Length: 65
Image (cartoon, rainbow, N blue to C red; front, side, top):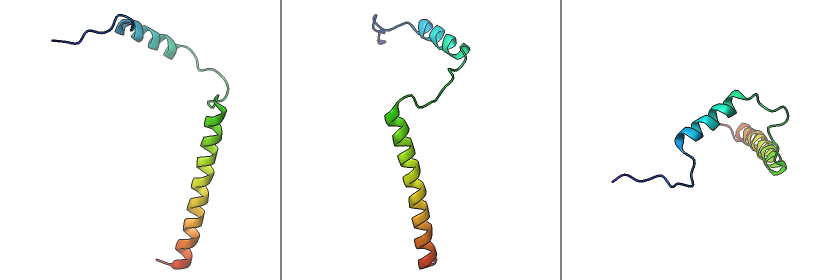
């Protein structure tokens, strides 16, 4: 017994056509970070990563191998 796809979902052919239309259209100009929270979170994680590596490097240099 195979599972039947619900009727409210688009068919696989429709999904494929939508994907082809999206890939054929040129990318919109502008920032990839349209969501301000995502942009702030990205920068915060990047800065924390750099700080953690610098502090870790300093501690590693002081304590030695």
